[in-house]
Image 1 (cartoon, rainbow, N blue to C red):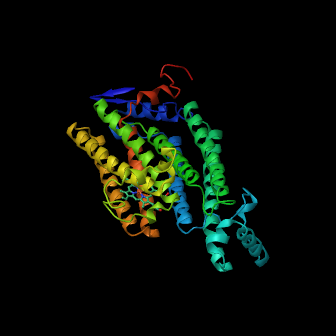
Image 2 (cartoon, protein in one colour):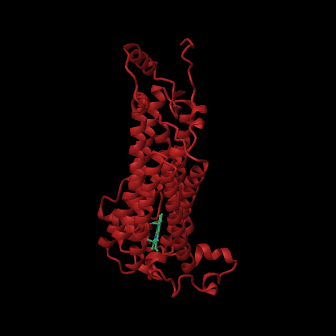
Image 3 (tube, helix red, strand yellow):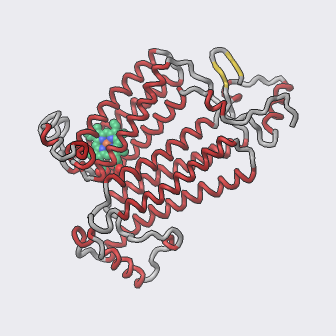
Length: 396
Ligand code: HEM
């Protein structure tokens, strides 16, 4: 730990890769170089590679979420009715294979009730969307696992970092299973997938994404920001509300609830709709997941809450002169505002694919900024406790 003015430097990973970083730093000290805050925090070489690898995986996950959104918005998600993790990589290569895939699709309720009479070329379009989504999922698995194995083999990762990375890998595997669980819900009785499962699928994808963003941030040494505990609390609350809002957004998407009540700020003729229309299903809580009006209403209300919270947090951060946390709070507030405007436009225009995908993309931006803000304000002591720290005087 290095103390400088108001700042405490608590590196996540002090152990050097085969001692190179320590030797480099002591050489610099011997040569009389003074490390600036930024250079002191520059990661040692192996961690630079780990950070870039994780940033690439996070970018791939964001792309995956968008391809998943396009797959849903083009109603393509049920076009492949089986799950073959390895052989499914190969698409139909002959006319006979295409006919077979099309025949399998014709057996599910979605074809019979919504797409009966669809041509083979129309089927191919929805097939390619779903196939690309699954292929990208497999690619992310490989893009995660191979470099991870390499880093494990090369050494230099702390026990805590390894545990985190294994956990993220396991969650990625679980996400594949949740994806199939979601598709399976639309193959027998329903014409589309269950909105609960779709929301779980999106939430898990974004939990993994958030975990990676957090890990990337923690791999770089940064000064502890001296900020009131209140700011820490509101940043954490903002992150929780963002996740709740994403979950509700996925329910809106899964229920196609954005194609109804296309007015704003009124919904069903009022700012707050009639209670008997909001809560007519029993038990009452089912309305929160099943009732198109209630689901859209809760997504709007949570958006307003997020907006007010982000505004108060930004005012507080600027007023507290919280340095990087003040600019982080302003960026977060700006992103939430843009996202709210996009949500309203998506709704008023009855969910055109371009706007809906932009709304989804900016949700990822909001989440990224919210994670960064919590991480920025969070105590850096926990990170210190995790890695193995080799005292300078210890031999070897
Ligand atoms: C301000 C914070 C907001 C966040 C973080 C957010 C997030 C999301 C997310 C993650 C989805 C799911 C996208 C998908 O699964 O494809 C969604 C869907 C949706 N949101 Fe929002 N939203 C916000 C505000 C709003 C507002 C203010 C409105 C309108 C008043 C709105 C209207 C919609 C609509 C209509 C959909 C369904 C789009 C579709 O079917 O693809 N959102 N939102």
